[in-house]
Length: 119
Image (tube, rainbow, N blue to C red; front, top):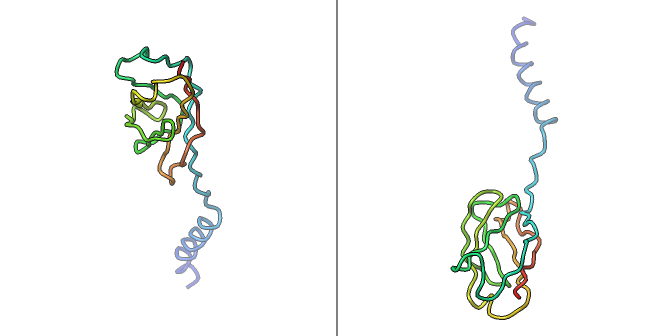
């Protein structure tokens, strides 16, 4: 009789140990934008269509981008690259444009802002 319940007892012990010692789910990391290189000059950006490539890490396919506090059209390229199209008004006068990438909250939320310089 003692051997009849060995399999059930082993399965229950395995379940208990799995629940007690299971790894905690990994916390979502906020996206990171690498500091931009260079300066945006009115009317003289790499692309005539005002497209800027943001590089960093942790970008999600559903990420949104804010430029100067306004949401801009963004194109997900990879977890390390997003393109954003600036509005012509963004580069009309000299100053700084804060750029933030927003992942969905369950994927890390907002990145720290980086500034693009418009000269």
